[in-house]
Length: 80
Image (cartoon, rainbow, N blue to C red; front, side, top):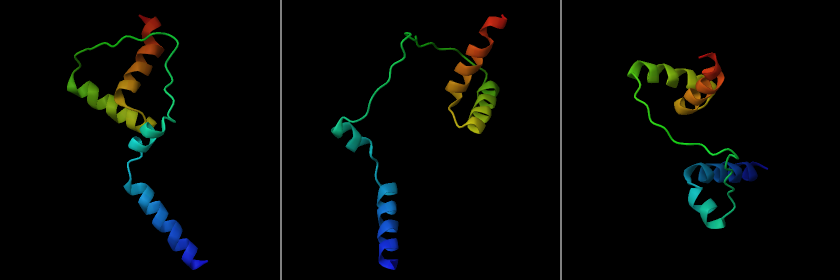
């Protein structure tokens, strides 16, 4: 039983060392989900303090700051 435990640890270590992106691309097993509504890229200039605040709030939610900004815009666009 103890040998099996070491084997699992070795497998976990190997898993963590590898970047599986290449393997996924070769296997063509990844599925890309596109939104039904077409989205358009945009660019805005923001004060660095706003970006810092967005990053802090986004980190607590486990998302990126650009996603956080998108959520804020979506939730509050009708108020203006």
